[in-house]
Length: 402
Image (cartoon, rainbow, N blue to C red; front, side, top):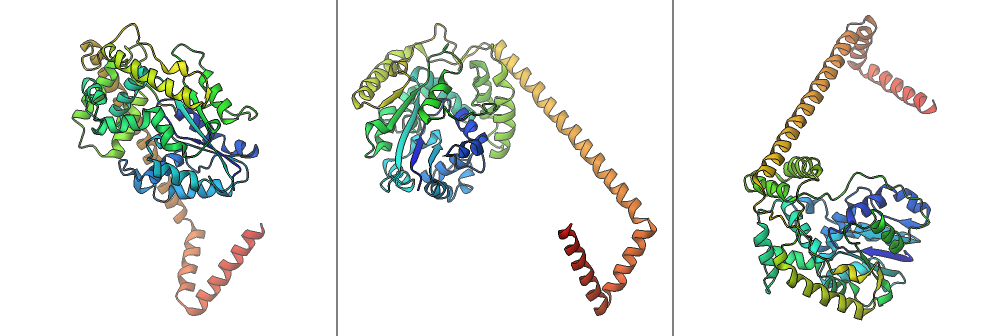
């Protein structure tokens, strides 16, 4: 049974992709230091989260069947500290959270620590809308903001957003009977802070200071500017016939992550200034509640009260020239990808042709012809087949000794 489990349950857009990638790439090193990160593939904890919550996710839920129980079994079998991390776990209901805690050993001698990485709503709201767009939504920014402000919160967008972003509620659903000292909030530093500050806070929260982790990873949750996000939404409007796997590889990965995200000079997404009073009121209420509960904070709860940027570019109506420029960049990238694949295919065909040529030459050799004739002759009789079997067994035995 694991002696200690660090259970990181969100929130999205708080550096979670980087944290998980570092843990995955260093999982052997972590184990040498008595820390288990149970994952045979980089998305193992994502699949486990889907399984725990029975969430549909573009067909990936079929791969997830049984994933949570397998992960929990690995954690229980480990004698040391285990880390479990995925941001969509923030979506879990109280019964699902209770099941997760119990399956990881809570109540059976394992010390569970709940970790939540959190960021101010001023940055989270536009980031979450962009993430929706990267997952095929066609909802405008104005409609997104309107749905979030609807007191009923019963729309698809609002129900998901508040489930994974309303910090006090997430802690209430996951905390169960854990003491406040075992609930840790890692706050995302304000824009302009030192680049490594968030990672240093993760290291402190997870107790990784003594592990010489390799931090090289190119898998990050990238951001798009306002015109680039607008372009992605326009693509979504006309691409509903594209299969989910093709959308993920060609549109989200190639177009959004590898191409449009490199255009860092575009106006950034930001909160509509008209929404700031509503957001500031929510943030103040959250900070007061979290302070009252007395949780361990790595960073400062004051960082949950965001400030509106000095400039605002409406992502529903960007400058046409900026959209055209982003579209031209996208077209060039798509043509380059087609060219790269064509060249790779030509190389593959050339290699296959050369292998066929070498095989034809080999088949014309007298030695091979004699060998094939002998094989056919022996295969035609009972005694010959016995001799062939004995020869093959002898060859196999000889190979194993070598």
